[in-house]
Length: 142
Image (cartoon, rainbow, N blue to C red):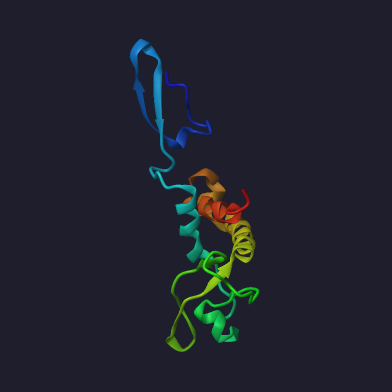
């Protein structure tokens, strides 16, 4: 019998068992069929972060020169690109946020997500969005 059974924390991720020489099992595990790195998962969570009301944002915030949440000036190293978003009057905006605000917003969205997501309620390990938000919330703290 395999060492992992239903109810085990690793069971959903266990994709392949292969016996090796001498009867010792080698187990190959992938996470949700994806070999994405933590940084890739964190980057995939950026579009999930809601923006403040775009009608109240200044022009510098809409074009990404300053943080959309705290209006701090951004440099290439300190900015996190939040992706193209629809803006007021059908104009495309290019918002960016500072690392601290992105982490704070990711933690806030993570807490909301885990309470309302059906997949998280059934099995928190199976939700890729939850993992991506968590990775984004922890990014830069190491």
